[in-house]
Length: 171
Image (cartoon, rainbow, N blue to C red; front, top):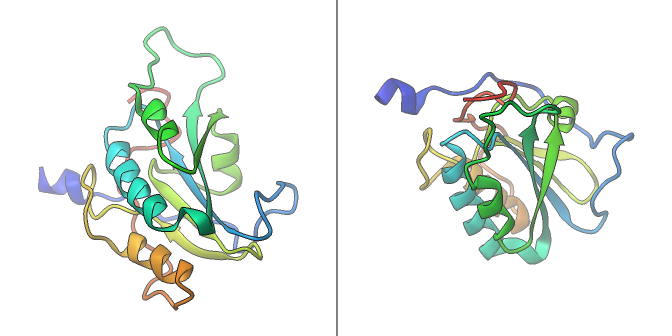
């Protein structure tokens, strides 16, 4: 059980600058992208942390959660209500990421991958915002986002991502 909880997704390197071919959400506010698989049970912990971040900082932040969705859904496809839960978070917009196209452009491979871009489009944090798979609570990702939004230098710029693969159609 502890091995599962502490197993991270593969480390990836996301674009250091916002990709020019993708329109930026805002040039006045920071952007927080969350990539998730709607069947990953670990995603609920990420949403708990995202809710806390948005409660503390939503006036300074544009947040989007991109949920993987296959172009052709298998008969057993379900999002288990996770995307609906995400859509209820204040200041968060939920978007279907068909075939993981946007996740691929940002090199996200694990559900729970978070990318924080400042208002100039510079990547300032890449990683997760949970301390373990499926567990909410104190973590370096949340602290780094808070520091960045408070105009401080974060202690870390990369954190581990605890979650399931984004590329599997069913988990």
